[in-house]
Amino acid sequence: MEKHRIVDKIMKVVLCSPGLTYQADAPHSTRQRANAMASQGIEVTVVGFPPTYPADPASCHFNYVSVIESLPSKRKQRWLRWKQKLGPYWTHAIEPFLVKRAAFRHARQTSADVLYVAHTEPWIFLILSWFNHVSQRRIPTFAMIAQNYQMMSGSSWSAKIRGWLNQTAVWWLPRYCDIICDNTHVAKLLGVDQHPRTHIISEGRQELFDTLSQAESRKVLGIPVDKRMLLLFGVAIRSKGADILFNAMDGLEPKFMVYVVGQTGGVYDASWGDTEKLMENGWRSDLKIIPRFVSEEEMEQLYSACDGIVIPYRKGFATTTGGLMKAIEYGKAIIASDQYYMGEIVREHQLGLLFPPEDVEALRRCLSEFAEKPESWFEEIRCNSRRVVQEKGWTKVGGQYRELFEEMVASKTNQNLASKKSFES
Image 1: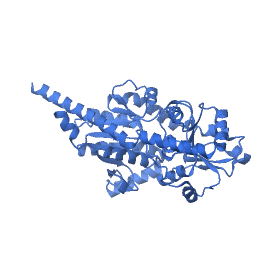
Image 2 (image 1 turned 90 degrees about the horizontal axis):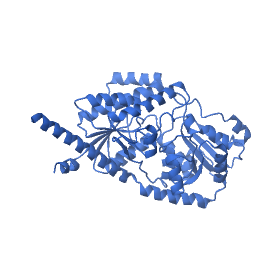
Image 3 (image 1 turned 30 degrees about the horizontal axis):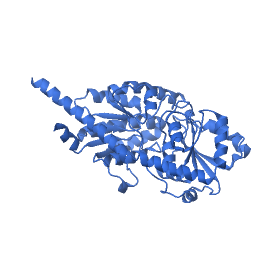
Image 4 (image 1 turned 45 degrees about the vertical axis):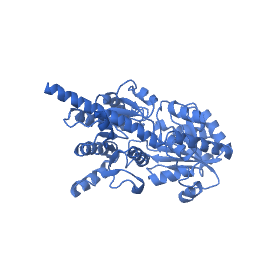
């Protein structure tokens, strides 16, 4: 009877999303995750840094609390000056700390049942989780850990230190909070797969095939409509394998366009790589580099405009990537390095072409094949992608979150009852 009351009450979840201002896929994935939880009767509040979110509130079924907008005017202006002066150090250290700290405070103030943290920066979250663990007002906490952090670190010294700190922090986090990984491969690589506080919940998928037409998107972006287009989307770090792609393109006739899009500088590499040789060998009009953070709207237009997504990541990438999920959601062909989750899903559902990680010759063959494939091949991938989306929609994932959160709340309630009985006796 006690469990029935726990399950049926309105559950309150605070979803902390510290990457809303600097991770291109964070606004979209946060909205989808929050709506998925809300579809299961959960009262969801998203805590983030931007003054406003989301861009289309009518399609969202959650509340939003802005960290910067909750400040007194003078402190707000001071923070914005620091943000401008400190650049990447603010973005990847100070801002995530401030957002997560605010999320803990909001969860306590509103008596939330669960705090869920997406796009976790583990070394920062470890500190806050320890304080939460020893607090008398402890909040049950889940941290989404979505990558092998050492593998994903860039080439700069600050990026290497950040990667090492995050990788080390993950080993300690299960002592203070529960961890959610999107597949068993990443949990195993992180060394937390056997821990009882590690849970596997895969990313949900949303069908976006007809959100924007390819022709209209290309018109808005100024992209020619008479050539196939391949997209590499992310941030400029060595593990993304942009140099592998450029080497594979060398010697190929530019029968298709390649767009490489994402932030450079700061904790990321200064550029996506040396493309001068490619430019001299015929790719000047067909290789476009956009070395900056792009808005969610522009990201959606780029995915709609392309024919395929290339994911040439180096060895060791075990988790889901935004590029992979977006390719499926938009029904685009995938050219990916054959490893872990990426290889599994592309092979199992026939979503594109695979090549051994870091094999330049094999990738070159895939690029040539992509250029010559008939339109029927792309249409078949579109149909296969639709089935994948239907199998793992966000509503089903929301149900998994609800079930996991209920177990946590029930366990906490039972522990409190046991402590009370022990004290009374």
